[in-house]
Image (cartoon, rainbow, N blue to C red; front, side):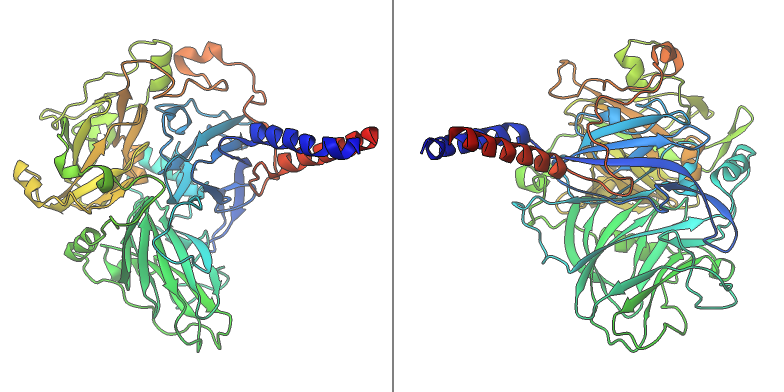
Amino acid sequence: MASFRFFPLFLIYISSFLSLCFAGDPFVYYDWEVHYKNISPLGVPTQVIAINNQFPGPLVNVTTNNNVVVNVTNSLDEELLITWNGIQHRRNSWQDGVLGTNCPIPPNWNWTYQFQVKDQIGSFFYFPSLNFQRASGGYGGIIVNNRDVIAVPFAKPDGDITIFIGDWYNQNHTDLRKTLNGGKDLGMPHGVLINGKGPYQYNRTFVPDGIEHETFNVEPGKTYRLRVHNVGISTSLNFRIQNHLIALAETEGTYTMQQNFTNLDIHVGQSYSFLVTMDQNASTDYYVVASARFVNETIWRRVTGVAILHYSNSKGKASGPLPEGPNDVFDKTFSLNQARSIRTNVSAGAARPNPQGSFKYGEINVTDVYVLKNKPPVMIQGKRRTTLSGISYVNPDTPLRLADWYNVKGKYTLDFPNEPLTGAPRLGTSVINGTYRGFIEIILQNNDTTVQTYHMDGYAFFVAGMDFGEWTNNSRGTYNKWDGVARCTVQVFPDAWTAVLVSLDNVGFWNLRTQNLDSWYLGQEVYVKVINPEANNKTELPKPDNALYCGALKNKQQPPHTPKLQRHKPGKNSGSSLADGRSKILWTLMMLLFAVISISG
């Protein structure tokens, strides 16, 4: 009887112990090796950057509030950083993976990222941020799921498919880098890849034999969520599926008003979620197309990505001409109006509160205005460079945030101008002085001849307006401050402007850059410094224990070691959560329970 009297009490002990062990937000672990791999996506042997032998890399599939731990081993022959495109790193720019905040991971070293996907949902991707490496791969998808308590404004899809589209050169990133360093343009890409594979042979003139293409297998009548990311270098792409409507549902963490498109322009660095119902007959397979925009089609015709949508009951292969995309090479009005039509679903909940539910953008007082103007490349000190507002950014040898932490002087100047410089363009490490809890208006003025897309780390900015011509104060009269979309990457058309509003509530140093890889590499970026004058760990996490050191602080660097943050080492091709640890503890507790019962009996 003693054992039975003890049993309820012991269960209480078990319950209390488990509550203590597993309180708080779960951890999800990944273990990656970044290395070179030789493949031939367009029929020509090419060296790509793979992760755990995968190109594209492994999918990071997590839920809001998860703590993500990614142990990265750099097996390249050059330095490496991974940046998490669209993940906001609340209070934690130390994990941003760009040179303004992190020293690079040397070859044959490992470094462990740890960050929380806090208060955001949706479709994002990661990629290497240094040395033009994204041109060779190293990218992969990030899915941030809603917690169960948060309603989703559409029925749960029957499947989830991640799709990467992007322009591709047969040269690797080191050769492309040499071209840019030599003062030349990259020229026309050799093709467009879909999930790292070349085009389906829809035309033997444009597509030779032996090219491996991507196939998406689906079931008739079911609805799938397609998460599409443009991970290319500089080419805007039009995405479409033959005979199928694509219903836009989400972009970079914001639920949108659901509307059907036959095609949508996806610019470099942008991510979209579509709901696609397999409602066609299965007489044949269907083409999935990603084609270049705003180019002379007669020259660029072979630069088209083509994959296959295959119904399980399909009766034959896809054939015939590709579905037509927009035909407005010299008139970008269609694309601009399409972008303007993308609106936030203001009635939907999300992982973070709907901004228009707690405050209205039109009622907030703007505390600062920055007009950032880019132009075609210019020569500065004998080198071909790109600029923002007349300044071509130069990375210092010591990351900005690390220099601040250790009070290293002279690594940057806090004097980025509100208006573009009127004199000769110059090199510099000039930083925007952002006011903590300020509300800034940024006007992105594109005076180049190609579409540029801009991204801000650490934030989702509110897209208030865009139009052709030169922005003026009167342009504010065209802003949409109610249901414009909040996102982290926005396009700016040639000879046009885009205005965004940003609430500076995330402390740190945050990179504001063009996503066009060639323009970014040549200097078209700036950092925004957002510091709480009252130092505390509530608004910014402290420097991580495993921080790398370089530049003026290189003497602080210790030999490579296993970081304290790495508490679990899962298999290389997948992430794992606390499930393994829970199982072990439960097994131990059960053994203890049996032992106690035996002794009591």
